Length: 419
Image 1 (tube, rainbow, N blue to C red):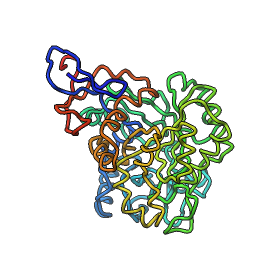
Image 2 (cartoon, rainbow, N blue to C red):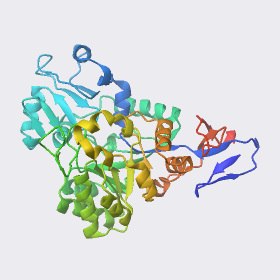
Image 3 (cartoon, rainbow, N blue to C red):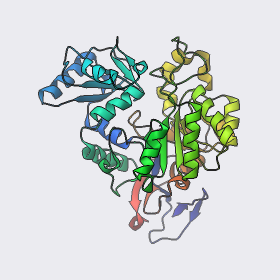
């Protein structure tokens, strides 16, 4: 048997079976929303449905007596939900998770609770902080335990054993249904510095060791914060954190040994992070999730501050249709996997489920086609995230019939009795 070591090499060990197979730890998805992914598996996906089909799903749910309807997955949709119901809250969340269509009862409630710049009353659309406020008021999950069970079963069947997740939206830590079936690093999502201090006082960080914040939104929703205006809009996106408050969070995480994960898709959002890091010069490892559009000078600064980039390979394919219309010539600055590899920027790879379906083999092939070597890809999907999450990776394994550093084939999952 050939075992992948923490140094990134395969070494031969005599075992009771002693066959020529290659053993690696199970896969880590370093950025997803495991409960949101489970909800996606439990509910119809709106991605390929037309308006009439979506209406039927909503009406069926209302006829069953549900007190709210939450569905997710559309990309391009214009729909007025009021004719279906003005009394029962209905929300259709875009696949990116940063923008949603709602009915009037939700608009009326949110307009009293949140800055109206996050609400488009004419088109009955909410985004970013209004969406977070919706979760706070109405909740998000229809079946938390069922969602976790469904997501865990799916992930295990695909060879995943470890997840860095983001689920504390509209629920408390006591509501999390996690068990030992899946090793989960939970990121505590915050909307402002006061929330961070409140979570600390509530002793969240006795259990959780990571903080998550959203600097901006998404390309699809035109809410990623850009240096220049969108190619198809007069706006340049939304910024959710300003530099001085971000610096307070960075200092807090440094002082309390917390790993900070910062969602930043647009180049201007990344600028604010890098300016903050340049001012503070943190010692610990922290992470930018997405970093979807990067300039050469930003890559140099990322390297200087030893920031980890948590990247989603499938976005390279799924965003192709919108990058031209959203960014024009700037699309050449997006998803620079090969450049980041060449510059030795530490990278994690993830799905951002439920935005994308977790499929590490698909992701590995995308990265390999972009010029990243298989040994680097496999190591970063297995052992590399251990230095952040600290999880033992010696209990279950992926067993390959061929050397995955040379040829990627579909492995089977085994335990110590199989090797």
